[in-house]
Amino acid sequence: MSAAPWAGPPQDAAEVLARAKQAAPLLRERAAAIEENRTLPADVVELLRGTGVFRMCFARAWGGPELTSTEQLAVVEALAYGDASAAWCGVIGANSGLLANFLDQSVVKEVYPSLDLITAGVLAPAGRAERVPGGYRLSGRWPFGSGIKHSDWVTSGAFIFQDGEPWAAPGSEHAHDSLQFLVPRSEVVVVENWDTTGLRGTGSCDYTMTDVFVPANRTFTFYETRAEPSPLGQPDSFMRALCGVPLGVARAALDHAREVASTRYDRMAGQSWADSWRVQTELASCEAEFNAAREGVYGALRRQWEVLAVGGTLDDLTPTERAAPPLAWLHAFRACREIVRRLYDLLQTWSIFRSSPMDRWLRDTAVMCQNLTAQDAVLESVGAYLLGRPPLFRISLGLQR
Image 1 (cartoon, rainbow, N blue to C red):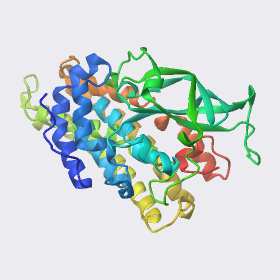
Image 2: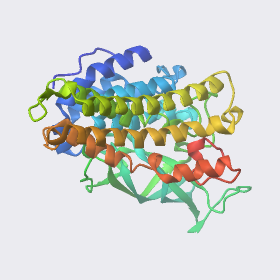
Image 3: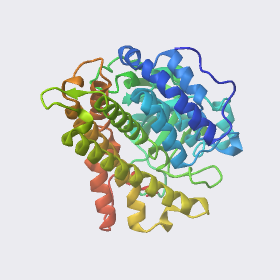
């Protein structure tokens, strides 16, 4: 793969998307190498950096393009059309700009002197942070650190302790508080345990830290925005574009199946595949499923953005409107997995070889649906919210508490 064909950073959403679309065929060419490497090769990371995906969430106040949620989603779809692992790492790395809304504003330029720096990590509080003068001592092991090897910064959730005992701030409604901790990648030890069926190129290894000092101004919580209010300074903002990965893969599979069907001839039936009722109806049915799933996501995010962009809050949405985004994300993951499976079956033995992209897309969609965003915990939480009960996975609904 040649060097990224662009000079300088993109200036706006249209340019980021155009670059992502230009990168897609290059990523498709590198898909086998990305899988074999089990993490993104250095040239692929630089190609992604050149598209502007890692800077796309930074606010204009910091010099970023500040893409809307739907603009981010379109960029991730375009990258996933080329390779799912690359797109997955792209959208994870783009969290840098989102985290800037929650960090102490005095340190944003310090930690992100370039808007193209990459943040990886695990938000679940899997670690332990001991309160010490000036900050915390952080230790623990975190699973599924997508993109950890090529990251510049790592954010990790941990429960807080003081003198070895669980700690909560005075007045906290929780018996045991947790925070997010931002540390340089150099402080992290990667555990080489990523060897999976799909998304093999994401390098989603476990990682550990032992007694790493984190100053207090590099801690944050998604329930406290420290920047100027914005639609991206919301607890659920880091979840909105992830389903662009299955949507991009499903679109690629649909286009591939149509291309195959237009060139095949069924000797037993004595007709071309393009004239087959079975092929015609299955392709059309999968297109219908895809269009509905995709519009469900875009429609939910457009409505959310309409309210937030005029200074509203997520509380200004009706319960049904607030529930729509997490349900749409989950549905998109699961619908795209089913579309790929059906197309895999439709193409029969043309799908089963490692050289077929259908093989990779089947494996990738199977694995990405194990992400929490596509799990029943979302259904349980949204159902509880709609019934006036406390949801377990409240951040998916953007609930502060």
